[in-house]
Amino acid sequence: MSNQDRFKRAEFAAMLGIVINILLALVKWGIGVYSGSRALIADAVHSASDIAGSLAVYLGLKAAKQPPDEDHPYGHGKAESIAAIIVAVLLLLVGIQIGKSSFTAFFKPIEPPKTIAIAAVIFSIIVKEGLFRYKFKLGRELNSDALIVNAYEHRSDVYSSLAALVGIGAAILGGKMGIHWLEYADPVAGVVVSLMVIKMSWSLGKESIHNTLDHVLHEEDTVELRKTVESVKEVKKINQLHAREHGHYVIIDLKISVDPNMTVEEGHRVGKDVKERLMEMDNVHNVFVHINPYNVND
Picture 1 (cartoon, helix red, strand yellow):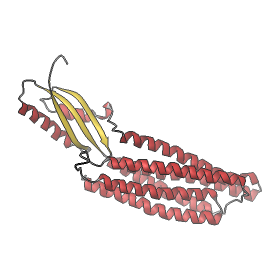
Picture 2 (picture 1 turned 90 degrees about the horizontal axis):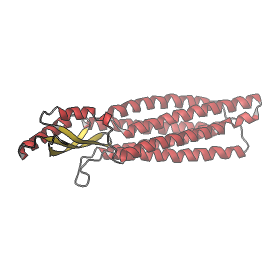
Picture 3 (picture 1 turned 45 degrees about the vertical axis):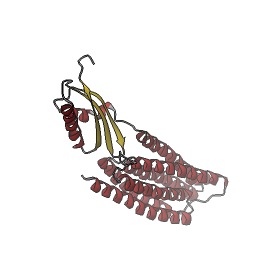
Picture 4 (picture 1 turned 90 degrees about the vertical axis):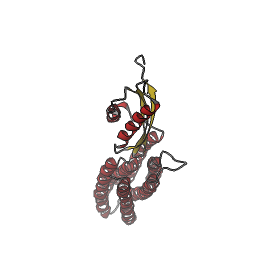
């Protein structure tokens, strides 16, 4: 798959998320206000945050597809990871706001929400789970941190909607059965939603920051890369192989040993052959090869 096709599919997924989240946020907010459900309003705010998250992913993808330039010789792939961090921060802020709003409801008179709130939550769960599965599969296929984090953002909305569903259902049941303390299940669900959102933002943000700080692939993840290098018969030994992640691609810093009696030109040819074979792999963006003289005592 070409880079152009990759970014075209990823950008479509991000734009689809924006459109769906706008519709969901409006529907849940309107029904939440009408039905008097704090849990549904909190869920609507969560969906609204997904709009900003999908927009951040879209802009990150637009930046990441820019070719290398003088200031960015390694390309712009890390823009995707930066977008993922922005999404995680937005999730954290939304989680805190939802928790604060739901907690204050315990100190005010409360009424059970209307039954229509349940239909809105069920609709949201179905749509968001479908969006999660689509984006997660595509993110794995395209090796995009931003899309994967954005997918989990949708999954967090599914979890929050499930919590809201339990809270709304319990509050309605409490109102009909005259169990007034059960009516507070709605704001309790709002608090639970906030904690789930905060936890997910921490997990996703930590992973994205890790990838941004020049994370290199672990040894078990470089097996195919090493086999490719060793397939060049003139390579006597791999002294060092660092594959740094830059969003959806990797840049390899490689040190290899060759026959010390080779001429400079012959050693250069071996390094060029190694680089060309590595560059044939889908996720390798660039390779820097250093040639060492082979020493049996090393």
